[in-house]
Length: 228
Image 1 (tube, rainbow, N blue to C red):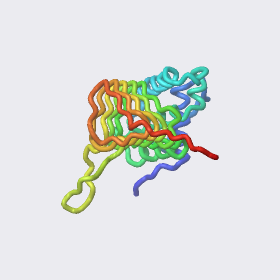
Image 2: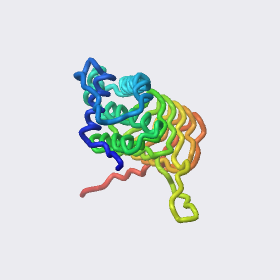
Image 3: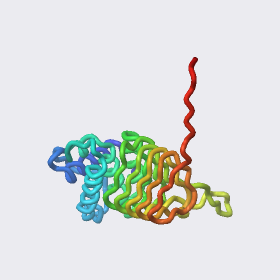
Image 4: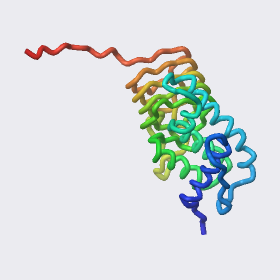
């Protein structure tokens, strides 16, 4: 019989991870003994911690509304999302069934940020606000990347095998280092966004973009209504 983890086991695991990664802000919590995880996972916890702390640093660097580090750790959705994701990503790499996707869906339910555990995300990753962000399975994100609310890094279409089933092949974007994507933009398909590029808001993008680019939609026409 397949052993399916319970929500309580997953919550206990994340309580343990919060205490390990942010011991100054969360009380000590034991990992659930009933949730059997590979020994290699525990050896990689220090790297998970390092990466999550770089994500906190990225918010401090990019958001002038932040008052101190504790505010980011305790109240910003990015911190909860990335702790769940980076934990889930390691478990996904180690072939643990169910737990990775369940962990990212817990974060999705709480923050509105949907990241597949198989996605690859570099250090110093920042999501500002975050509601409605979607990052697909085969997405690759470099270092020092910033996304705003409503951004979708998704697939444009699917390829099917001989039995009519969608094939699990690379189909999501690649964002190189120091890319910023503003709100409600969709980048779809296996396209590459070159480093140090800015993508403006409300853009629909399905083509490669060279490094050091600025991508904007057309300036809207403004008309003043005469109410008389």
